[in-house]
Image (cartoon, rainbow, N blue to C red; front, side, top):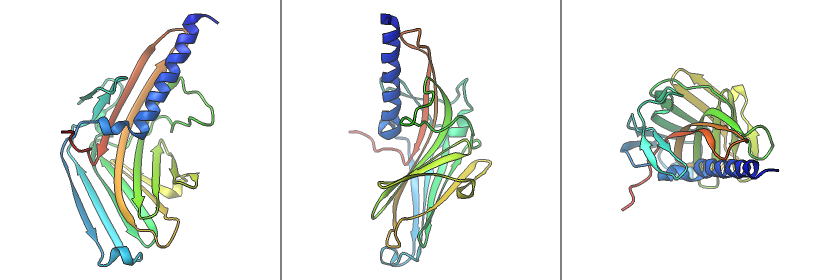
Length: 228
């Protein structure tokens, strides 16, 4: 095997690791652009899980960022590969009623259905990626739940299990995506929410030492705090 092919595979691994970092923690590198939070909760909510809690996170528009391989960020208003409004979050929210949690996100454009959720652990072609994904991280007093949606498919995961979403678990209506699921225990109550949208495109050539095309665009609510 030639050095060029080895270099190409190494670059492929580097890029995949970079995407994993961005998916897990890299959004903290996005610049802070203001938003607001509105929260209402039933009296004695933390002691009474049958009550209802609502939280809405508002995000300013035109704050989608591109992130390059060095984690340098830049706000983008348009891009040749995607309608940026489709990942520009306007607001996100969470509601708890009993042990049922509903999360939603509204974008400036429309919810875009493209590609599929990356499965790093079960094989598949990871050389060429072109997908839009919407993610939620919901924290309760007992656990964290990661909910991911892409192109009429989805996953929900916590510390103990991962399962696929079915068509009865979500709704897509124009600019709004809603997903609902049950908490594991009756004693759990909602604590916090964050939501992320992303567009990833990677066209990798094994015959070359680098990438023909790499795009990572993302928006996050709430925005991370400014670093002083």
